[in-house]
Amino acid sequence: MTPDSSSVLQHIVAILDCFSLDHPELGVREVARLANLSTSTAGRLMAEMKGIGILQQNSATRGYTLGSRILGWSGVYMDSLDLRTVALPLMEDLRRITSETVSLYLLDGNERLCVERMESRHTLRMVSRVGHRLPLHAGSAGKAILAFLAPERIEEILRVTELKPLTLHTLADPVALQAELAKTRQQGYAVSHGEWIVEASGVAAPVFRKGAEVIGSLSISGPSSRFTAHKVQKYAADIVQAAGQISQFLGFSAYNGINRVGE
Image (cartoon, rainbow, N blue to C red):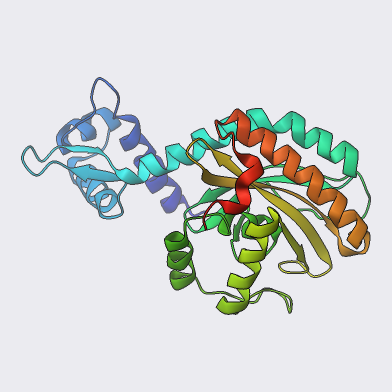
């Protein structure tokens, strides 16, 4: 990051810090004073922040308030907190039972975001990182989310998302992907072999909250050499049970009928 970009980022954070429950709407001059910025700098940055949805402006008063984009970020953060608190002990149990990497993903826009991961203790393992964003069409964790979205939401995502073939096994054809999603809904979990990392396999199940809304997925992953057909069936039962328990804690009580959700 260059000094100039760092300075701009600091100014943006300073502007956002000016807003509070006591002062939800502020004018440019007020923000400039509170953030110790020139009026021209505050006005320029606030106009740019408005243009990308971080701030919104009252047409009558010309004052600024926090924008809808902030709400989206806060929703992801709060869901992540709730999910992690509930999921961590179950993830630890899964890692102990399977000896493989266990990951928790959250739906974020048209992608999945890794919010927690417990690495396998094997020397040969799949290594990624918390905060990693991945597409929904590649890998078991993404398909487990995508399959259980509302049909119109699935169509929207497939319409605006380029189905990039990350490997030779990525489902980049919409027809083949839709067939795979139907299979995932029918069995209640998703399986992948080499779809986003060559020689990596995974088994994942969706996580729901109250209202039958899919918000993420839980996955077991590792080298394909260890994911035999027998192991996949065993891991599928384990991951569905754990994801179901998380969903129950979040207010979704009909996990046994998830194959009917979204159809």
